[in-house]
Image (tube, rainbow, N blue to C red; front, side, top):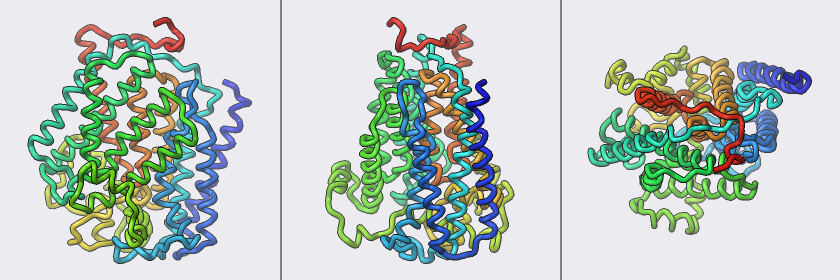
Length: 488
């Protein structure tokens, strides 16, 4: 180990830990209100962290600098939800008090919301730094000597992906993820589980394709057949209004290409971000209309917006307001969950167990239900959802935000470090892209949001290993040489 080069890394960790402690104290001490003197330091601090993340080039493959890292994508979405609304407010571009979705926006909770936001991105960066460790201590990357080990895996994924889609559509199921926009749900927890599995399998199949291309191998037949199925499913859920599941698949595909296959420029990345925001906004308006065709979506993207529609609040503003409302609800009107919400959330790893344990009449079982009940009333008919910071705070108070998000950062850093050690492995590419997509959107969800997808993918790979072991086949040992330099 190079101890001299590791000193700056350790010093940085100590400094960030001290900053985290100061921000945790500030969350207790900050007065209620919406004050510029508090908002601007948080906004500037965010830009410092974001610019550092963007300019500190991550290399998963040694020959490709990555600008779409886990932290960078996490901070981009985080910015839209927790930082930008206040920046626009204090610049006079928009007004937090104007919201076309909510009757009350809890403006007095802005100061605490901003401190909580700072706690979140500082904790995530600290955790990521701990998880990845000092770059000077990383051993050389290993190649993936997979041989023909994953050929049958492609057929299994194809069978599962096509089979679950046929079951979902043939049975007329409608999960809550798309039902909240069509106002129709069917199948309950079974539909929700199948819907999640299909999204997971789309990412798994796409990751296998990226691994083969990165290894400079031809795409296997089952993976080739998976690609049009992925395209069909992605278009389907987008037209049904579920942009979040669509972007899970899209981020994994785009991030995988720019991480493991070919480097991208800042301009190309900026163009992708701009196109994503346009698409995200367009789908928000299209899902409110009767025309949900692909041609209607394209036409809507390029048509001029009426002034009243342009000034209409984005659904992002709902999430921003939920964080402010959190400090009005807990602990004054409702006590902390003390881990209850996380316990129920993690129980979802086992299919149908939450419904059987809680019963159909259970309520206030997650932070989204708590927020919706207090912000909209018990008979609102729709949900405001939750967010990463609220979910951590409602369960464990001010220490929940730095604690849980620090752990999330450590986990993502560990996954990133492992991917850098074996950047051509199908398994590590798959888990890296799952984390990349899920953590990019984590700000708008609960802490346990990625757990089911990651756990079920892990079980899928382990089951395949058992199947190969029963057939007397084992995954070949990785080599230290780069497969791109070896003879084909």
